[in-house]
Image 1 (cartoon, rainbow over the protein chains, first blue to last red):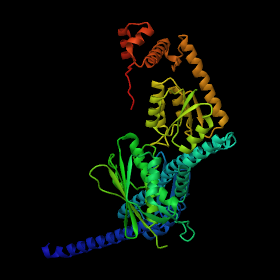
Image 2: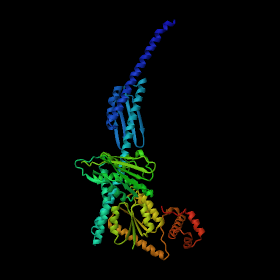
Image 3: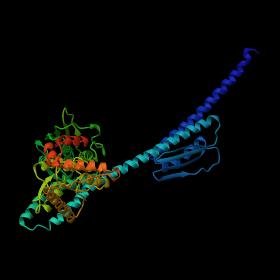
Image 4: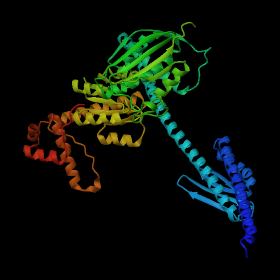
Length: 356
Length: 199
């Protein structure tokens, strides 16, 4: 046998290898396209398994998978689709404390290379479903946790308010002498600003992220210096106020911004009795710049300060500064933390709206 | 006149409670822990009405329970808890610490007045008995642990009570208890008792 007689064999073997490689490339590309389609579909359907899983078979049929069956159970929610076609199925399941997932596919062919591609498709589909389940569980758990925090906050104020009304209705029926009548009125006068702040906090809290109708909003001219002095007095802060200025806005919103910021200073002052603070008001063009600085400890976790439900305080709701920033943003103003060598400082900018 | 300290961070509510009680009692007020400690230091307080949700942790009972511990460790007043913190564990903890009563907000004025009058009666009776040389002590013991635990708890309780009454004067306390100073030091070491100072 001469060497020339082997050439056709080599040529044939080479053509077979090229043909196999082209075929595998074709299969792989088809499988990758389908997998990417599954990712897109999951995103388009908002990672909602109830909408996603029934649509999956449409994509799988393009890569010769004839049936999809599943049994998914999480947080008392069940998603079940029975196997409808007989054939060799590929299955995967997992059982965890919070959920159970079982997914199976019935491919038309399961020979050689097709088997491995089918396995990859199944693993990726399983991964997507498990991620969706975990996402849903996390969202629901967080929703419950946040709801319970909100409930605690509202309940605290609601119970105090109910207790206040109980005493008020008793006291109002026991104003025997003129001296007691005068004292009763003086107590009410003294505490009305606090009640008004509480009302503002609750309204802002419940109205969170809801824009007030500008046309119907009740706006008045607010003396910022007087408002800050009243708040500082209420919290008994060792405080100085410089500058002055006024803005036209809804009073309860402005009150809520400064109350939330000064409450933070007050909370800090309870464990740092030597803390002093300084409030500076300055007009800059058509806005007012208010700087609130204190000599206390620096702000922890600066980057997450305005994140909702994030608090460094035990039992803290983590809503105060988020709310203050939301209101300021809605008023086309801003709140930010100023870099400080010592202590802490906030800068609040609010439009004056005096031309309106 | 019996004096009452109101420890409540909600000023509007505090003023209404004050108005409700001030005709009959001498009233002092505090809105946080520091104000409460100052008021206790400078005045003779008989009864404390304490809200557990105090700043900076209004939604937890932590700060209120700290105030309660401080009061019961240093003063002989009766503490009525008036709070919105509705958890069985918190009530248990407060009563175990020695609170006289635990009232949940919102409560009727009648119920609060009744609790105040009861606290007053107990306080007066205890003072009367003390004048006769009889001291009332309270014990929290697990019955299954036997008599030794009970005896230790009783020893500890009476020693703490006498020390508090003598402002931690070991010489005077030993004299009242009828034991040597060395014996009293032995008990202090045994029970891990150290003098706590005001914050």
